[in-house]
Length: 184
Image (cartoon, rainbow, N blue to C red; front, side, top):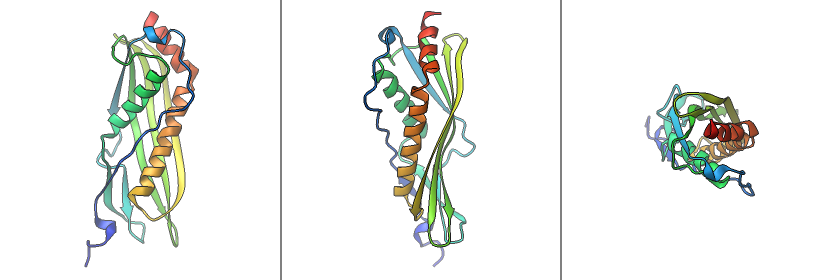
């Protein structure tokens, strides 16, 4: 019966973020109040992946259990907090335009590969508009998945998010911009 197979059933994915280990407090960060705002500008906001049938045709959507803007915002806030910043204020704004948060399955002869990708444009601004930092952060993770399942989406999206957060938080220019914006 058409539509009764698992390729045609919607699934939700619980994407979680694990903070980076061994980060150091940033000198002066305790005096800086930061507000993180994430805007979803993805061209397709209704899913984070799609199941595919044996012919590679897109079938049922896979959605995130939690809104992806909340996942990304919480990840950035956690990393800033772990470095000593206060994420309870508005003197410095970290504005994020989420461009992509998606796992694409590539169908092979006998199995599928999962390609997860996170892309976002990050700005550090002073309340009132002056931009101190602007950068596009992109990260990918590839996995030989076998099947187009929510478990494979979870693995690749969590890994891609980890890589994106590592790239962003290891950028000393971003941290310096937050400190500079707080003093300007």
